[in-house]
Length: 192
Image (cartoon, rainbow, N blue to C red; front, side, top):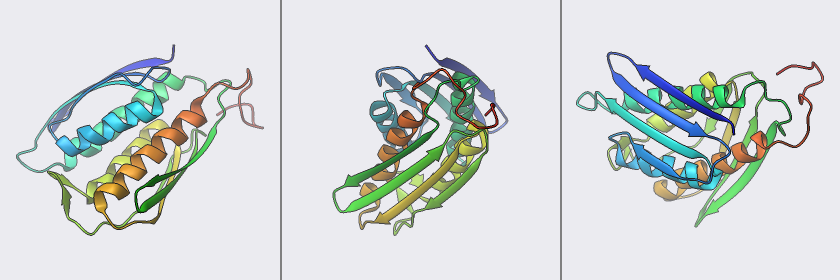
């Protein structure tokens, strides 16, 4: 089983992440931000990742540090759990419709971090979470995991539906990219 445990403590956040990327979707999520918890639960379920994430952050300031640092810790966990990436499919693409919204997530588990997030929101917040911080979450995840992440919302009207489509498409694309399909490193260079 490909697993990792990450502990990250700063003056702004105290985070614990346990991950099994070959799991069944079991999860316990408590970030102090209800909407982020909901999205991470969707990630666990649709990616079949076992996730235990606890974050105690400076929410009296705002949600930025907690959201970004959860992305950092989760990205570190995926990087650690993937190890040398031997045998993975490497690429993952998935379209998800969520009512009127449609999202495409495309990933390359290449060891090279890059993040594209083409999603616009009408609302400033969903629950207590600032919508601008979704981009920060995916940027932080990409940077620490070494995964190129392109998220393109093709269309949508309802902000809740938009971001739900994003997390579901991302989770499905990630699950596809990390599945074991051979015994080789999926790179002409021989290393990822």
